[in-house]
Image 1 (cartoon, one colour):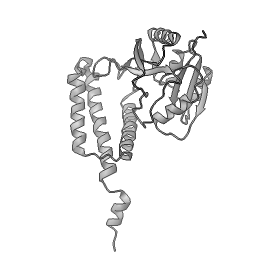
Image 2 (spheres, rainbow, N blue to C red):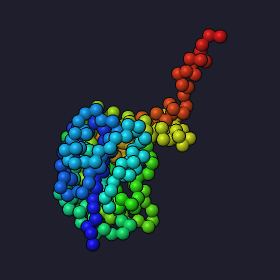
Image 3 (cartoon, rainbow, N blue to C red):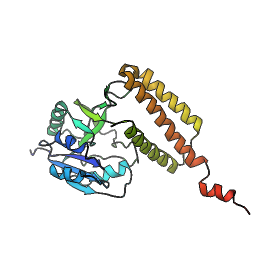
Image 4 (cartoon, rainbow, N blue to C red):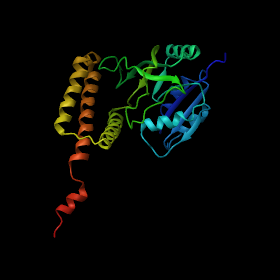
Length: 267
């Protein structure tokens, strides 16, 4: 039998800081590298070509789920393995991925643990580890859903999920500014998605969910064992939770500037 082929797929934008180190961890053992860029202005494309990647561009950002679906349409290999540019494959994970592809079990998708480095430390609590992610599956079996943010691989009862050994290392945030920018983008996409579904929110909901987020991460999930970084991450996550509910409230319960100006204009 012919050995199944394996592609690694990424969606990127301005990832020159991380992309080379990421691709170095898959170089030589994947059959295909597929990258879908959303309009980089740095040397992301040049780095991709250094690794022989098939580089595609989609300037019209449709959201994370739709962008991943479009990227997968360019994959020709039997299996697709998803990576983000700020992630690194450990040798143990590499071996378990190759073994899974070689076995090629029917209707099986694969998950593995992701270990995140945040503000100078690996986070092993806060509910962040093991952060099991579904990232490997036969290309023709499934794909991501069309969620704008927090997209997930579509599964059904006929599929079997297996957990591979080895960690995927995730260099999540460069600094506080990076965290705030990234979380603001997620909050915006979350609020937009909820607004389109006719959902509403309130500031009190935001406060309640933010408090619950902090308590869950720092106390229930033992974030205090991650030291100062655990406290900071729990606090920032609570803030991000409040912001997304506040964003939805502003979108659905307040007057646009044009309406307010019209209401207060002289007769």
